[in-house]
Length: 131
Image (tube, rainbow, N blue to C red; front, top):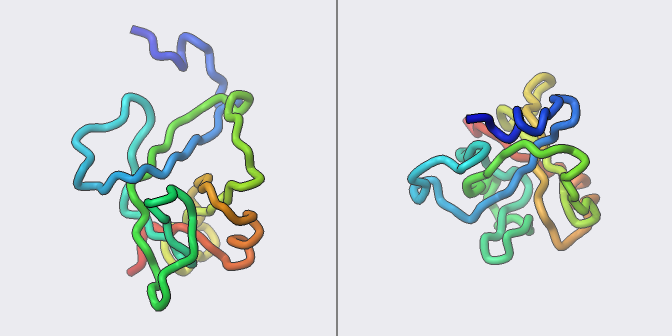
């Protein structure tokens, strides 16, 4: 059985990551997605994920790192991505909270009610380790 990537002859240079923050808790996940991967264990630094609106929101006072629900990552053809970036913060993911050179992993597109520049100025990022 051929997968759609083989059947459609995808070229790696034409593929981009599509990221969707789900509202699932890692405990609720019983099996992997039909396509892509689920990632959990990331933390939001400088803001929080509001599950009630499914958007990036102001952080909780005196809380440095807020857990992110399960993240679904899959590949799509860049020409079919169709993402409106006017209210989407392109959030960098780092290995740890130090954000040292070489610790960048990839970007996650996070919907927001505010302009992305607000989150850029606050230095909002996702980190994989807070230790």
